Length: 360
Image (cartoon, rainbow, N blue to C red; front, side, top):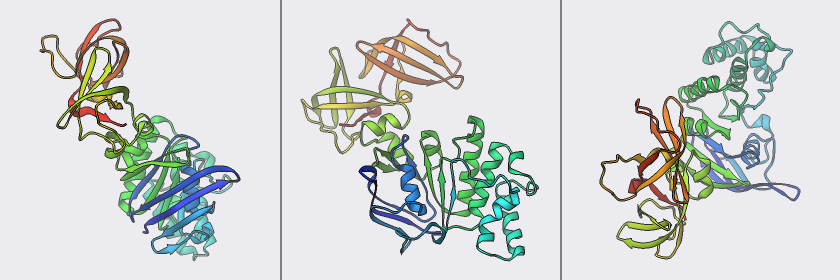
């Protein structure tokens, strides 16, 4: 396995910026995800690593080897494409064996390696089937086996689950992570799906407009977003604007509406947040961090009274949108069998001090 370093890599298509100054090192054996909306530059970055695009600036290294201008077939990477790119006129066995045949391995070696790859992805006994006889999930596993059978240093996956239904996506997500962990292979994964990125990755690189917004563990990008884009793109959050009215040690008091002041902790702030009285600041409050306060509870710090605008019962959770003065607050509570409030009913909520994150 190998580490991957992108040393200030940029890519332009004529006058159009594709990727700007990406500087990262992906450790050997790491599961690293490029996450962002369509057109953010994540697939362009992956294709530069694969060798399908050459950078306009910067260098790419696999370990200590400079591969910036090496063609794809000399990089020893395995790639799974969004549409799988399988050969419809070939059997499962022939599809998986293709890369080994190009490398002119002996037939017995090819047979052994293909059968091992089939076992890895649970496709034993499918070797003679045509591709059009397989389900979408089985085709995805053929593509994965074809990428793994050549024993690559680095596995590249470009939105491999986007064509699957929700249940199959979840099952295949688990299988990919299982395989990656079992083989210890350096894996770079591209997706726009936050749930995929959060559940599978060791680290995530969030991209927007061809630029890196944040690199960190799933916990870091979720709980400590560096800016508004990351906070709103990763999961769901309430973004409230406010003005700092006072500070008391580590406590920051912010006015977010004429009659509402919230208190947060200075430790929960991004590097760009200016936490001085008079400064405007953006607060990020995750729905699951909001607590319901009982009618008998004495008024406390960050306790708010409002009216339910939307009530959503999902089975696993109860989600509310609550009107509080001029603000809306989204909250999520684990379903424990309690009665679900309906639109128009009053509700009392509390935002824990430690659950307010200052973005800047």
